[in-house]
Amino acid sequence: MKKLVITLSLICVMIGSVNAQKVALIDMEYILKNIPAYETANEQLNQVSQKWQKEVETLTLAAQTMYKNYQTELVFMSPDMKTKRENEIVEKEKAAQDLKRKYFASDGELFKKRESLMKPIQDEVYNAIKSISEEKSYVMVFDKSSSLNMIYASSKIDISDEVLLKLGYSK
Image 1 (cartoon, rainbow, N blue to C red):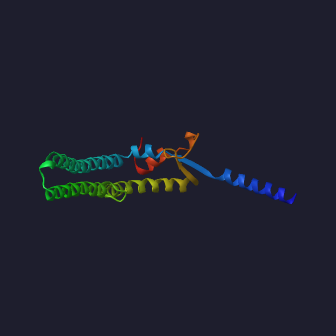
Image 2: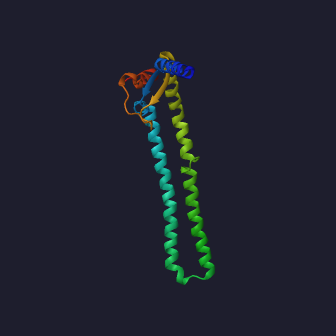
Image 3: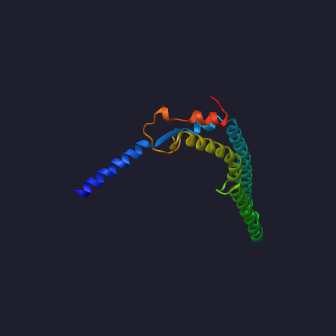
């Protein structure tokens, strides 16, 4: 009987504390879409990415062309020439792969560029969310645009527009 009373009182305390917590909701995609600096940074990243992709494709195409030429001239080559041309083709393919890795790997130039352009904007948004949360005593703030499995969220708890106002962007 004692265990039942203790368990019920713990459940009541837990329910009471859950009800006292304030929760808010944001839409990070919406917020970022309404920040001009984010759109500009995104465009810069796309341009740089396309430029670097063309460089990689040019090297890859050069290696493919070298290989096709090698195949057509193969019957006329001496063993030494074959080896030399094969090594040149392998080097060109390796250079293309190295360039691709340099630009697009998880620690590559594109990642570093994205971080340098986006981090200040994301930090500013985070600080605005933190400030609003502290002002209004929110315990948790969820991002409805992330992979959070949210079935329903009331628009009353969406503070996305407040975050934009705090950042100086009004809708």
